[in-house]
Length: 141
Image 1: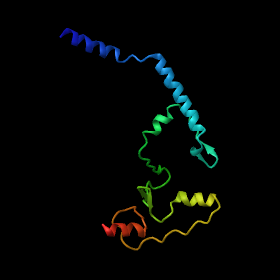
Image 2 (image 1 turned 90 degrees about the vertical axis):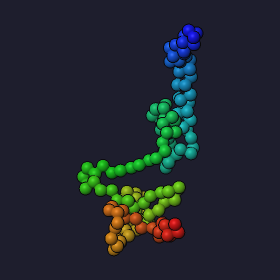
Image 3 (image 1 turned 45 degrees about the horizontal axis):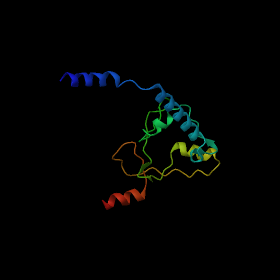
């Protein structure tokens, strides 16, 4: 019985010790991975390559499952309207967001006219979603 107690005592005390060589090796591996990410041709957007500013970036990227964005509402009425959403890679919603309009303007492209507001009463406030494909999918169900 005493052997079992001392064995588990030993395991608890020494399980926190990690060899320094392992820590150094992990630091070098992270540094090499950051270098490889900065030179990856698939991680280039408009001639700007990935710029990892920390060696832990590769570990953090693997933990991202959802990206949500919201406006701050500092100078506005703090209302966010739903105009588009994406499910399984399919984007629903035909309207343009204010950000997309500004991007098109900055790129010198033609900005389409906004969709006229719907005349029917909204059952959900701040949802301004127009998409005939979505309505067809919902009718099937």
